[in-house]
Amino acid sequence: AALSAKATTNEHNDRLHWLGYVVKANAGERISEVHGSWIVPKIELAPPGYSSSWVGIGGYGTQDLIQMGTGSSGLLERDYAWFEMLPDFAQPLSDCVGDSACSVGQGDRMTATVANVGGDSWAMSMTNSGRLGGQKWQWRKTVSYKWAFGSAEGDCEGAHGVGGDNVTATS
Image (cartoon, rainbow, N blue to C red; front, side, top):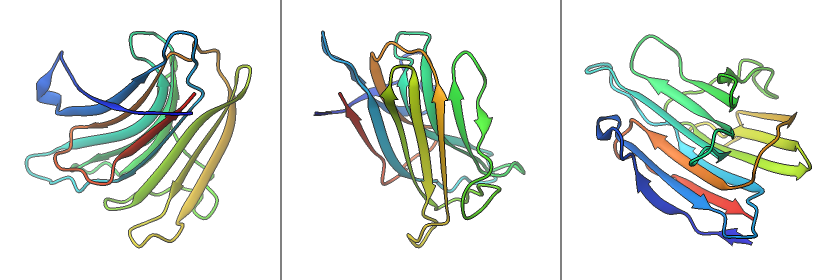
C-alpha cells in the first residue's frame, strides 16, 4: 500500500533551505520501498549555491539510512549522482548503462528507487532521462544492509523553487 508523504522543515538550521517529505511507518507496518523523481536544479555561480535531492529509507530519528540522489553546485565541481548506506559516506555512482561516468547536468530528469527485496537485501536504481525525457543512463545495484524499516524520506536541500519533486513510499 502506498503511504502519503508529509512535508516537513529543518528545525535545526533554516539557513540550509531544507525541504522534504518524511513518511513514518505506523505501528506494525514496515516501509519497504521508496521511489522519487526530481529535476536537477540550476545553481547560480554567484552567490555560490548547492543543492542535493534524494530518496531514502531510515534516518528519521534513527542511525540507519540507505539513500541515493544527486548533488549540484554553482562552483567548479561537477553535478553528480550518489548512493549512501550509513555509517559509510556517500559514494558516486559509476558504470551506468548508457554513460559509464553517470553524468548529471542541471535540468536533467531523475528517478530513483530503494526497495527491500527480502531480508537484508536491497535493490537500488536510478535513471537519468536527461532534459528531453529520453533515457540518458541507468544504474542498478543490489546491496546488503540491515535496517529497521521505520521511515522513508524524499528531500531537496539548498535549492529554491525546485519543481517536479515526487516521493512515494510503499509498505
